[in-house]
Image (cartoon, rainbow, N blue to C red; front, side):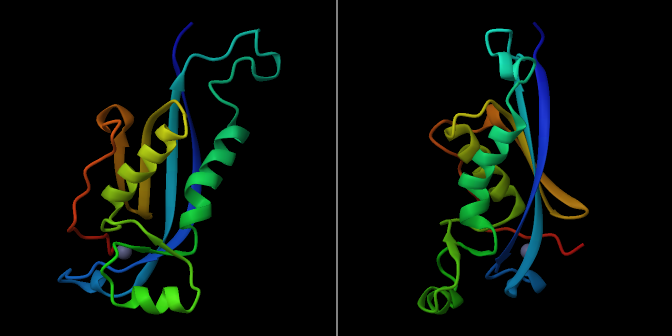
Length: 159
Ligand SMILES: [Zn+2]
């Protein structure tokens, strides 16, 4: 059997603030992120009758992405943890995800790739679109099992 790659695309909305950035990304603002998840594996055989020919049922992929990425991140403020606005958002019950790293496209691609690997998916790569014209891509083989190393500074795309 040959290995096959399959891809499913997801979107989520989130806010971030890149403190210390010299441009307009230093302001609190948001993006509609698009996440392309590529899986690789051998299609299942006849011993999985309802999933024969699938690398993974797209419905199962959707459920996992919903659980480990969309539920915690969608419509949240993606915080590094040092943003002055964070305390106010938490005190007023607004949704926040304290990531401990700067929410650049590069870091979010690393983060989502690692989460999906940890969830047991046969991840090949993850591509995170921050805008319609800018993305960051991570190959799963490049992410250590102990987790990625994140950059603490960085920019976002202002198109
Ligand atoms: Zn941004």
